[in-house]
Image (cartoon, rainbow, N blue to C red; front, side, top):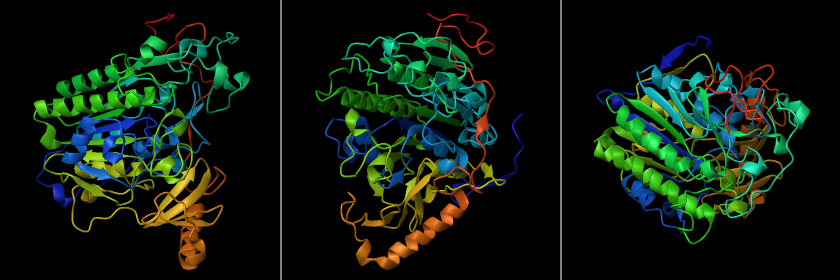
Length: 490
């Protein structure tokens, strides 16, 4: 059973007379800062244009450099290193994942009577103890990690415009990651098992190239149905797309539509998906009581066609292009239309913010790093974001920001992001006092979460299981005890 925890109310008088809003959190995978037209993209994204026109652009919103840490921050309200101390991301059949004792957004909102669903990519651990239904979600449909974490011969490591490469079958079933070139975070490379599609607690499909093309369409259809079926009570819908992560598999209806690249074709499909979500909310007259957030899990990988202009860097880095993500908030009548904010906000803010809006409660028996940014989203006068933000990459604290000032710690380079968003002019020599102040902030954080090590006072324990197994073995057998309805998948 989940550990008991103590809660403290996170209510605000701003919402005392308002019903609890529905919340939809759309999280796109590897979307570049300028991949959508509201943030300077060249490919048409009319639905996101309308969403921005009717809502607010968050232009200084931060994720993490890569997938799993970003999602850990989003779900728990904490810096990623506090709750998921791993060097990079999680892989299939990993022994570790987000600790079941962590309290997620879904669990917080369920305290206030919300129904909860996760439709899409999870990536916080693939063993049953770590999956969404063990972390507060009533319903789950999706894959447990990235769409490139499967066999080469089944299309998981190549784009659909290229021949599918073959590979020698891996001996055994890959039950022990260490025996197949992995570590406690899971199996890598050719040892990765077939990619599973899950519904609630069951493996329902073995994902091959043909199924990859259908992800966005099927997720969208499921999301629309979920909204229709749950319109009578407050709901939290978490929609983390596989799009636009490599391999790039837009639906056939969108293949070639952009005239630019497969990546941009898939961006256009994501735009259409978002339009379908907003349209069903309008149709059901839920738009006036539904907050929709559109964002990305990290900066875009430019080698796969993403665009992060005018930011420096890309996915995997702590330059702005690796962590600052295009984000839009939409709630007609509540979030000011055609507005934007440069307040420093982050994925770790969603839990306390949603709790505040829902009159829910947040854990008081553990530290949260996020803050309630609902005053920012609602355009309240004088509302502010974070005064200090720390940029972690794995175990390493690499940069710190306060106001416009950002210090890259290893090189001692200082940038004024208001004047130089592209981080091209090191002004450390002209502002020794600011460098010293930011270094002091960094040292304070190191005393809590450490640097270049996972051992630090504020770092919490990973979830861990003995003898992790793939959900689908290399021979097609579904994990024993995980899904008793299947023996072998084709």
